[in-house]
Image 1 (cartoon, helix red, strand yellow):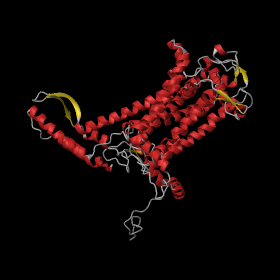
Image 2 (cartoon, helix red, strand yellow):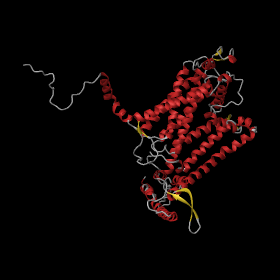
Image 3 (cartoon, rainbow, N blue to C red):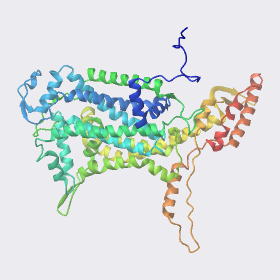
Image 4 (spheres, helix red, strand yellow):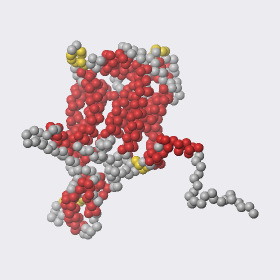
Amino acid sequence: MSIDTSKVAESNTTAATAKKPTKAGAVATWADDRLGLGTSMKKQLRKVFPDHWSFMLGEIALWSFVVLLLTGVFLTLWFDPSMAESEYQGAYDPLRGREMSQAMVSAVELSFDVRGGLLMRQMHHWAAHIFIAGMMIHMMRVFFTGAYRKPRELNWVIGCLLLLLGSLEGFTGYSLPDDLLSGTGVRAADGFLKATPVVGTYMSFFLFGGEFPGDAIIPRLYIIHVLLIPGLLLGLIAAHMLLLVYHKHTQWPGPGRTQQNVVGYPMLPVYAAKAGGFFFIVFGVVALLGGLFTINPVWKFGPYDPTKVTAGSQPDWYMGWPDGLLRIIPGWESVIGGFTLSWNVMIPILIVPPLMLTILILLPFLESWITKDNREHHLLERPRNRPTQTAIMVSLMTFYGIAWAAGGNDIIAIKLHLSINQITYFFRVMIFLGPLIAFIITRRWCISLQRHDEEKLLHGYETGIIMRSPEGGYSERHLPISNDAAYKITARPRDEVFVANGRIDENGVAAPGGKLDGLRGKLSALMFADNVQKPTAEELEAARHHAEHEHQLTAALDGHSADGHQFDGHHSVDDETLRGSH
């Protein structure tokens, strides 16, 4: 009798026999053995991201940049960056037969002859505005909440460079059509270059390929716009995102959230789905703006003519603040060593913008030097708990806003029927006085909000119920705030004012760094001395006894028992935090 061995096991082990890998699996295994991508990808795909509406501001900037790339690829297929003279014979009748550069011809043809061209042009321009606005607002959120502190100082520097490159990218972009408005901007840029001492004329000659306007500036701006700056932007955005993943995302304080963990949703599938949906929202909003609202109608401006200057011409909004400084500065010039120094151009264009960028870049490093805080910070802080830092940013925003408004001094004078000279003098005063007033008001406002928080924490919130005592006195009834509200108030470290030791040895010689320590102590006192610190455990206990007494009086007046009030439980959850262990 023959025995069927087809169902007999080949091994007596209990382990399952490994399946033969597929070709795709073999390739993946081969790549993972050499690159090690599998383990890292698995880890990153499960990376957790916190969830808060303010975090979407950076995503707006990111997705608008993606829209810029998509629409820019479409535009490059039809735009001709040539300054060769040509006669327009397209569909737009008012310009037909006019002499203009080939760049202007292709821009008008994109708007009227290419199907979907006008939509793509306007989407591209609107996305550029949203990209720069998104970066600005995102950076303000980062600064106000303290998200730029260690270990994220480098990411803050990258953000500042992205803002600078985005503004330059926008300038080169709206200069490409070679219309009368953009040509006025290019003429201004030529003047800025020539105002540079000693080397200004050489820089202008090199950029324009000869005397202004030359015949090479549009092709060169095109290369800068589509190749050089986008490459730098892509590299910096990639570095920004890698550092974000490496350092982990900051989060708002809350139950279970510490400096060592992140509470939120994993990359897949939750965060990826939300981010993908948000991209389509941004894309849709940009498409609606591009389809419904006209922006940069080059066919109305006409081709560039060096003999003409557009009345009321203004750059895009993000370049408006240097233009405003240029308008309000007096006509200061001086001659030194045979060279004319045009201070009226150098200060608003060549000195103040780089100075503002330098101040922005140095802010986290100056703060860490003043506070001597070398701890890592992964929890955000409320702006009111950082009065001086918040006031500094508001003063910088005020300076920016006043300079930006000054860029429209002629429009303001026309629309409001005012003297342009009086408006200019007003802006000259407010450019110095406005930031100072904004700093004082913002700082005092933040400190008053801190006092209000302390009052709520110790005495509860105002109910609006007025009670009358047997003696005839009136008082408002207070009730304890919730545990979550109390956590928001107390989940912050206490500020420590740096005190210079002023050490002097036996020979009467001061210790090294004494002057710097003295300066650091003064700045630290200015930054923290007036802050309202969260209550101590002793203050909390005194407030608890006072609240219990008040509740007993209230219960006696209402005819009810005071048992079961929640004030005692409210404070117990944060005793450890209030002792400074947070």
